[in-house]
Image (cartoon, rainbow, N blue to C red; front, side):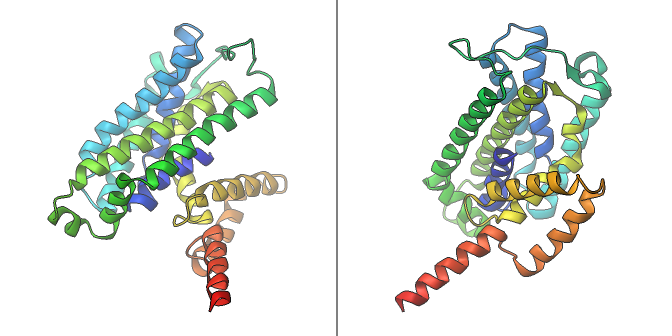
Length: 280
């Protein structure tokens, strides 16, 4: 989920685009991997190619039709596409398994006979893939491409006036975000050995939004921190009540009011202000 939230923040924190279609791309990644593992050769590489490639292709179509819109219009378009994809996954039983989803496939091992059924192997494999994705996002953020994205967030009209092809850069960011959401979806599929339509429901797109708000969109590791906090809160609260979303709401409201930069973002800002005061 950390990589899922980080991929969302490439759009939200980087380009100022609020996407409610990320869960659909996550689900496409899961279904792509599951279909290959069910009907194709037992290849981990092919599962990733199908899942990530499928998510990137779908993101390219959605992005092409959406990135020229701003703010609420972009958000509503991505929400609409997400709802369409969820409906397809839920009703196309011959391919997706309908409401039951896809399961019953074997998870291929790594070279050297390393089995991913061993929890420790799966943990380190997932950690390595997520780390690679985070490093990629870090390099993108610090590149000229990342600078142009932030410029489009701050003043789209001025960037276009000086010759910046804003839609093209936004589309590239959306495809990259979709591909990384697909990576997260493939990892989910391998870990849980299933893919279901619920992964693509529009409400699931709220998860990366909440994680990013909790951690802070303005600091690079903020969504990772928010994902960890979100998961920890979910695990703890569900031991006491099934209404854990009520508790999450009770936590989120004061965070938004008193820590608008997120928990980690506020902490980083406080440390920087203290260092600045010390130098003064």
